Image (cartoon, rainbow, N blue to C red; front, side):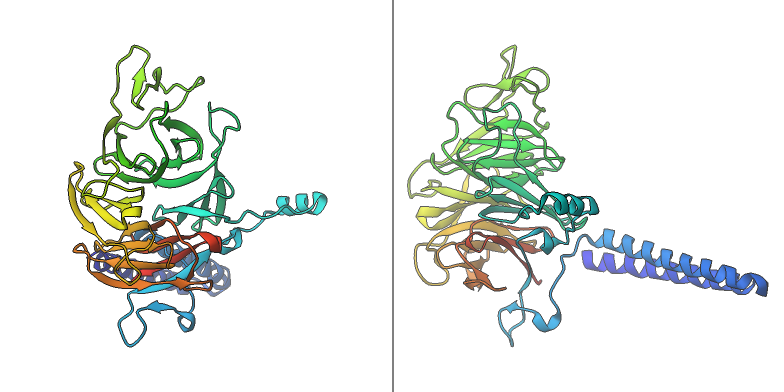
Length: 418
């Protein structure tokens, strides 16, 4: 339905642009001959401008499209003669891969003082797309979050922390999530907190303290219910936080706006002693029964608000409803397709297919909600189809698939083809 609507809008824009061009031609042809040459240039400029505006409007309606390789170099799964379902799109390693170019000022500085090494991905763990051309990558090697803006061909890093002990920066960023306001949530397994940054990358809040988290790793946000989920690998549980209304910015001294500070247990507490109860609940304990975990790592939510948890050392995926009630378990330990050896990142496309990264066998398996294996793609090694000990993954609203290809020091981008 969405494709049909976009197609109708596209046709309308083309028709209006065509009519505008025809009217302009009639106008110019009706001018006296001595004015024709002067206005022919104007007509050409207006026609170019009109087509450009129409193209921008169409692009805005369809969303951002990642650059794809030529048809002759296209790599898909499964192989012909089967109908392709997943296609390789691109790899992101350095600034050049997203079209970032040095300014003239930067070139002059480098000519005078010498070149500095260009930023590049070292040890990617978590990855996220905002669906509009920006890709966020947590990097435990550089201790930062890379932000690759392919739409505007820009790059920045997020790592500075306000009102935190020295060195006042991220040390081991792992999980990453975005809320509706564009705030960025990053878990740090060494600092044992989740940090919140605004759109500009400024640190505005911290979640956790007083030993609340053992090792916070995976993050997921249910945007419709304004819930933040945190996988606590060391404590074998899932924490649930309320992020509605938005968490207050930090002030000097580590307090939130309105005189708030973190109380023991992680709730926000104002100076009068009233708890805002930002932490809603937690569930899980160490074990192998349904609803129990053995080192949970990565998590994701679907459109219904169900939570999917990679239960790493139980070699399975567990599914919970928005209230934390166990629904289903997918997978078991094994060394054949349909089983798991070291499950890691998890994602869901717009049709509800479940993607699970296997870190040991360097592949991604796709299941339906019933746990039936549909397809796998990726193989050990480099190149377009290669993966080497991948970790996090994310599937965005346009069915682009992002995989943190950790030991190949890059992010691999694929696309599900409905």
